Image 1 (cartoon, rainbow, N blue to C red):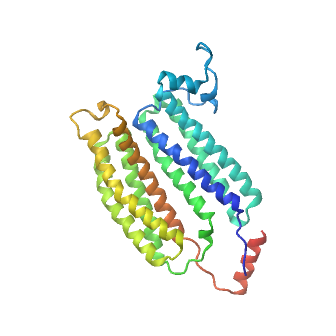
Image 2: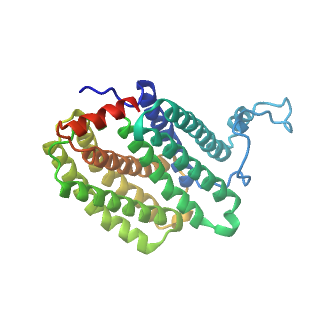
Image 3: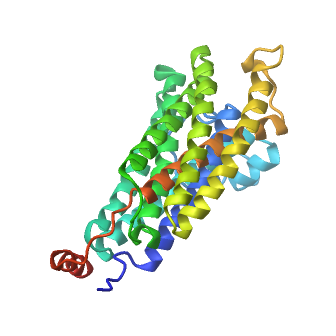
Length: 325
């Protein structure tokens, strides 16, 4: 029996639009940390269109974004650019959650709600990171950075689960491969958490563990990508495995360069001056790590998709009921 997809095409495309909008949010968020401008504005909650308000205290009352560009206030511009993109992703998730609730069928309806909740929680944490900065210190900004990678990976996983590839039957993926893929995701995330602690708090133990776990993460991802291509024949798995292999081979090069630029000089890490190339390398290493984690999650989600069901009367009835739910 041929059952139509439970999620309309435009909503499947919308889920990827959310991911594409969240990517520059991650990039600018990395720049916020690299350039240390997270507290450029000590007010945590402002009008989402703050950058487009007029500067009442400036002659001619220019639009704020134009004034910041003209006066070179890059810290405020980067911080509020990050906040603006956060509001935009949140709005997209609200639309996605409502539309999925009305238009999707079966358990797919819950994907929109999950997307909305994780993004809302991250936004609230971002506001608290600013308002509670004096009380909580850099530890809260570290937590905000760690959860950001979970949120982005969750949005990618939701887009994959809403896709046509998720509906294709899974025939030949052994259970032990699935379990190892999940364990690898945990390892990659743990390695990134130590990286965030090193980046925000300059902790020496985290620095060592981040580097040591990187070896295991790189080898594990390459192994999983090779096995996935051998066992799963759908195009999404093949292309994702190839892309993940290429990116994970580039990441150690960026990591070494980022480490040398911050810890390899004779200056204290916090005293290293901000340069265009240095900031690009450090932020690029962070963003690439986020993409690797999200890619590993996406590959694991594909490998863990439902197994093919035998064409028994009960299975056919269940598929038919899902199609009309």
